[in-house]
Length: 411
Ligand SMILES: *Cc1c(COP(=O)(O)O)cnc(C)c1O
Image 1 (cartoon, rainbow, N blue to C red):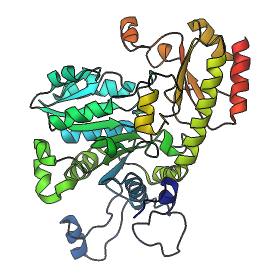
Image 2 (image 1 turned 90 degrees about the vertical axis):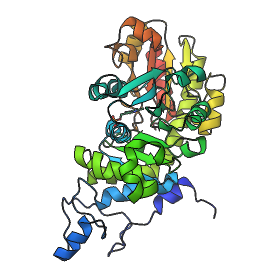
Image 3 (image 1 turned 45 degrees about the vertical axis):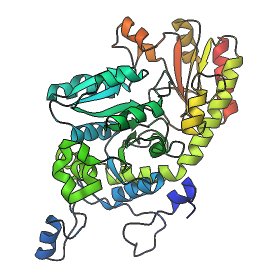
């Protein structure tokens, strides 16, 4: 059967139970606990024989509906919604590993992911091995019998470099290890991760999916294309749950016991965000192209980074993996840090803030903020220049953004 388009699918995912009022919005169930008809029914529930919501830290109807929507939209095996992007990442790694294991990760990472891998998890005996992920033999040299996953971000930020996903999938398959992508920057309407050999996606739904910085959330997406027998840490779950072993371990152990659940109110924002995702991303993308082309024409602008622009080093990879829509962040350079600050302070429409994928266009100087704790050598190694700014492009009318940038460049 022909698959319906992204937005049509999102708007028509059936509710887990039919609504008595036939409401056209999934009602918001802001309840902590759910009642049973009899003592026997509760017993059956606790034995796993009668499935129902019990207590909202573990599952609840409005959150379940968001999970079902994301599952339908990604054609995946299972989805778990959690309280933040960091909760998605930490829950996934905790479920897959134990002390003595290791993972291999790209070295250019979202800052708190880097801190999780570099500081927090090593204290529990997990070895995180960093790599540029550019060289096949270098990556293979890091793999041993305790390697449980290769982890990377689809587009690094603010460098806007696109991973060689085909190569990573080849290595992961050859060594029978899991491939995990943080695909936050390239949401599921532009990137179909399973088509490129990715097994698990982790997403900060705080970004594109929340519908414009409405609330915090995260999602873990299991594409159902990994043989869980290859991971000894899932042995206890395979017999009973089969291909749902990872989802079951996260739900019945890690996520439940560490308490990182998404709130029902947030899930409602997220579901609505999915309905409008395609519309919003298209608008942001068109704004990115227009701004990128305009910035390229300004003599004061020394460099523009956006893999959606022809001539950008990431252009071909963006076409191959993301249908030409490599997220909605761009970067550009002025002649000096002072020129950047002067420019930023003059902006009236563009806001100075550190989020991504808001409806508003946001600007930041990464060298002095996100990378403030890094040494100059570390910043140079990460290609973070003090002449560079990052623009997360929103849905404003693009003429107003261009006028704003133009007047600020004149000062
Ligand atoms: C924001 C972000 C995260 C963390 O998500 P939170 O929702 O802030 O916890 C992880 N990865 C990437 C790529 C991000 O942009």
